[in-house]
Each structure stands twice: as structure tokens, then as C-alpha cells.
Length: 114
Length: 112
Image (cartoon, each protein chain N blue to C red):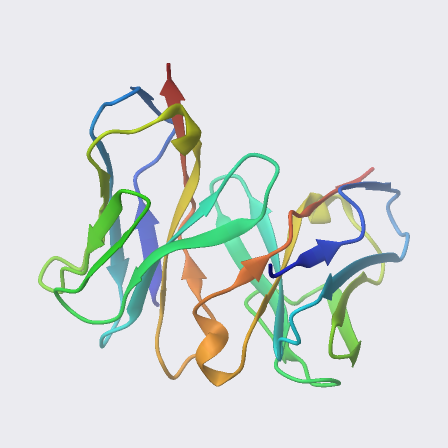
């Protein structure tokens, strides 16, 4: 079975801290994505990557950066956490050029910034 | 710009009731359309999809038909179960695009 694992289920951080959210997939997928999920707003794409060391901005990249040094791992970085970044963060992966349609999601990290 | 609009939840039904969750989209051209489902404590998973007009996607008793004339992709199930309680997301994507646009989600609760 396809597995996307996010390192933490719940995370509490203070304003101004640097935060790392880690995501690992075991399916050898080329594409990886970071979304945030907020009530009433659905899922919004932050960043995605279609290859190692490649990254593309999504709809809301401000305040975030990403790193993909290995194919299986995609990290989301909050350089200086702010309270408006309190949210559920979802990582996803998919296979190749035709794989943008079927995304496999992790179970999410609920981040609270105090 | 392109968007997906779903009926607001929560939707609460009794077991064995008929379910409809409305979804409409705005887009130029002919995107692929999807329903994803998120069970409690889990990530989203693809429920069904349709790639062209009049296609019907189906899975686990759920169905949705791609209606180009009404730009809709409503999700239906004839008899819901308690285990269908989840959040349902409508989404679309162009073949040339590298991202999926999701709706805001509809929470469904089924009473025994």
C-alpha cells in the first residue's frame, strides 16, 4: 500500500520560531505537494515539487519555503512562524506526468502557532 | 479564475437515506473532475473521477456525472451508511496543469 508519512500529528510553536514539517513517501513518486487546509477555504497549494531539487510555488507560498534533497522526502519550512500560519498541513505525492490527478495524502499535521 | 463551489455543510442524514452533495465549477475548457474523501483522522483519498463530458465516475456506491452544460459534478449515493461519515471534496484539474483545485469540503454525518 502507498504510504505518505508526516512526522508529527500535532505541533505547537511560538511566534518567530523556525518550523520544519517533514513528509516521506515510500512509493518512489516523482511529485510531492504541500497544502494547508482551513475551515471554509478547503485545500490551498503552498508548494510542489516534480523532481529532486525542483520546486514550484503554489497559490500561497508567502512565508514558506521547501526542500527536496531526496526523492522520498519533502520538507516544508516556516522561516518565522506567525499566528496566521496556524492550520492543518497536508502532504501529498503522485506518480509521474499522468499522476497529478491521483494524489496520495498523509494524515496531516495540525500546527498551532502561539 | 478557475474555482470549485460545493454546498456548505454539515450535512446530516439517517442511515439508508439518499445523498446528494452539489458541486459546480468555473473553468474555461474541459477539466478532469474528482471527488476526494477524508475520513476522520486520515488524509484525503481519491473516491472517483471523470475526465470528459457525460462520463460517470463511480466507486463504493457513490456516483457523479460530468455535466458540461451545467458545469456540475454532483456526488450521489442511493443508501448511505454510518461508515460514509467523512468530509467530501470536489476538485478539478486541466490536463496541462500541474495542480488540482479543491472546493472547500462538505462534512457528512450519518446517524444510525
